[in-house]
Amino acid sequence: MHLQLFTNNLFELYFYSKYFVFSELSQATHAYGAYWQGELVGVLLVNMKGQPKIFNFPVISRVVKLVMWLINHFYGELSDDYDQANAEMMQQYRLRHHPAGELSFFAVDPDILGQGIGTKLLKRLAHDEPGKLVYLYTDSGCSYPFYFHRGFHKKGQQEISLQTGVAEQPLTCYLLDKQL
Image (tube, rainbow, N blue to C red; front, side, top):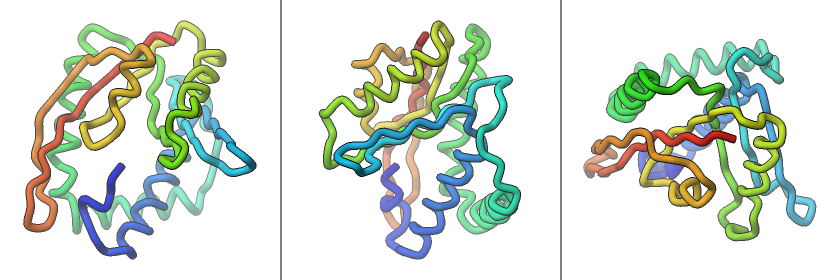
């Protein structure tokens, strides 16, 4: 996610990272982990429509809401363009597509890229949800070509520019989908 583009403050990075993970966990209907030599090296969180959430953290839910308020209050302008681009792409996408779920968080340890961890996580999801249409948001700041090599199709693209401190960060936002 390259959060370091938006702040150098380790306190902010730490708490935003925790908030983001807990926020995605609270929405997940599927959670997959991959291990390499006894270490957790990959995670895939998925939110499938109409399926029960797998985690219930009442206290963490409250913390997530509080942190979301703080982010919107103090940092809202940083994510406005990004969120708006994703919302516009989704609005157009839903005119022709009816996805069953979203890949909301997908990460593999960069030290072991190329070992097939991400592909195995996607294959496990396809095994559990065969034939279902899923989508995800990604951007040019991430390893988005990975998805194209795994059969995802670009369904939306928007160019934005994020203000990061004194610099502007150009970014291409994508909406991708795949029939599992």
